[in-house]
Image (cartoon, rainbow, N blue to C red):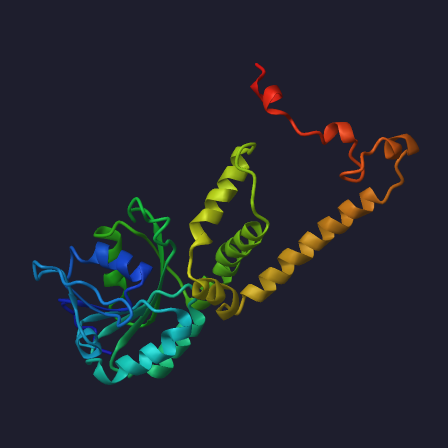
Length: 287
């Protein structure tokens, strides 16, 4: 591959979902964007300098092509782009996992294009106040332009760029993302959750849950299924949970004094009725 310094003049964006729109908003001030998404066709920038809708061939003709599609749609996107990519183009994906997309990109793209895997470690919710200081994992797969692109992301977009490999990325994300989304799913399923009497630690847990609550189902499935390291982490998590539950159950299995058992009320076994009475509005109003 040539090491000659490239000049980038346009970015092609395949996919204009929530994250595609987020990227477009931050990239548009720096380079013209050509966007293709038949499900969400973008409106052109009236100035003619920023975002313009285009077809697959026009997106693929750009110097940099970003695949902003779900991981399970990657193979189709690659096959669609392949015939139109010009020599020297830089193709990036933004998937939540990196091993499988990297494998598909290497297998499906011609040798005359560069390949870089990226994973912005944020989404529309966490980036609602801007992206400066947020993290982005960058995996040079087959590229002479990776460090130059990393420099652009650091200097222009003020991102914290982490150079890594697809395997190292997926190992960390199996813990960082898989557990976060898993716990969030469980908590949402246990709702409605307390909102009035809460601790700060519980509120922070709820904030983390809200940040991923509205992610597309494809994001959750990619994080949990497409990451080859996620299942082992889930199994460890539930094994520890089982051990703790077993220890707590063993403590409860100790016989209780007869007087304590007789004092329990009928509503909730083991809790005296006087402790389960509803607080009246009058009682709540007392100083």
